[in-house]
Amino acid sequence: MPTLLLKSQTTAWIEELPRHLPDLKVRHYPDIGDPAGIDYALVWLPPPGLLKSLPNLKVIFSLGAGVDHILADPELPAGIPIVRISDPHQCHLMSEYALLAVLYFHRAMPAILADQLQAKWTRRWPLYTPETAVGVLGLGEIGQDIARKLCAIGFPVHGWSRSPKRVDGITCHHGQAGLRAMLPLCRYIICVLPLTEATQGIIDAAFLQALPPGAFVINMGRGGHVVDKDLLAALDIGHIAGAFLDVFDVEPLPPAHPYWQHPKVVVTPHCAGDVVPRTAASAIVANIRRHLGGDKLHNVYQPDRGY
Ligand code: NDP
Image 1 (spheres, rainbow, N blue to C red):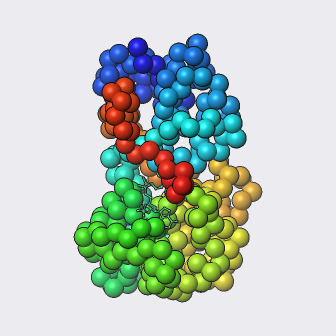
Image 2: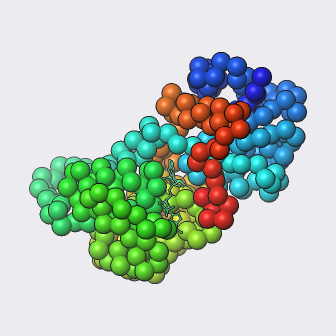
Image 3: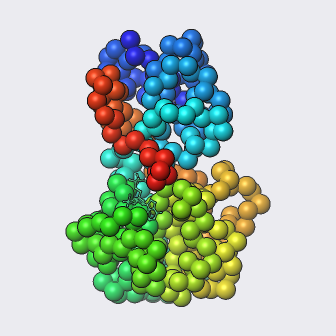
């Protein structure tokens, strides 16, 4: 009987997974039982050494679109496939967040909320939407959904990926030359990249300088994508007009961090998208069935490209 170890505070998985595979036994960390009896692990932020302690582990399932929280384990056992989650509802949540952040700045909400505190009636209008471009860094499952939805409400949308892409209605760019061409065009830039060696610190002083004056930065990828001191400097000189940040190098964001009190920054507690058992369980179980049947797994992390 296949057995899966769950390391998550979301207990709904315990009922949801066997609904799709009644034979599956789920053990909830820290109640591991006999470590040798565990075939699969479904984890968010596994404690270092946990996965290594499971001698018969066959597949690691990430409870997030990224796998950086698993790769951070210095004792991660080699050679075990890591599967990235694919959840249509998480995509939907991420797109909601991206639209919220873009529209918050586009409709001048920071100024309107400040006016309200002083009972000031100042009417403000956005720039002409069909001429106000949004750039999406990362055109994977999530980035494409965001790009399509921004396009549907009338923004010109540019997207950036590692390899060349074609997405209806979106101007696609790739590689370093593509990034250089895209950045000066984008008033809003949204990061939904995976954190890899190549994307670590991508939003640095040079990147920010390449954006037009008055641009806004929205980071919903990982904290490591942004060089905080460079973003703070660009905000303070006014080149960047605002930032909407969901992810941080250290989470929870420490109370003394300058982002908390910064008048041009919105901080949210890594809540842009979550994996929802009701919509994600079937894809996980489909991969378990593939593994049991000796078939190729879907959505496997590829070490050579880092995501
Ligand atoms: P995918 O793997 O489907 O897509 C990743 C995209 O990034 C691809 O388009 C890929 O290019 C592109 N990319 C990767 N490396 C580079 C690079 N060096 N240069 C240019 N483009 C690059 O991931 P998802 O869309 O599922 O998720 C993206 C990220 O969103 C996650 O890794 C995670 O960091 C973040 N996330 C954050 C959440 C939150 O709550 N804040 C929730 C969920 C995800 P190509 O198409 O060529 O492969």
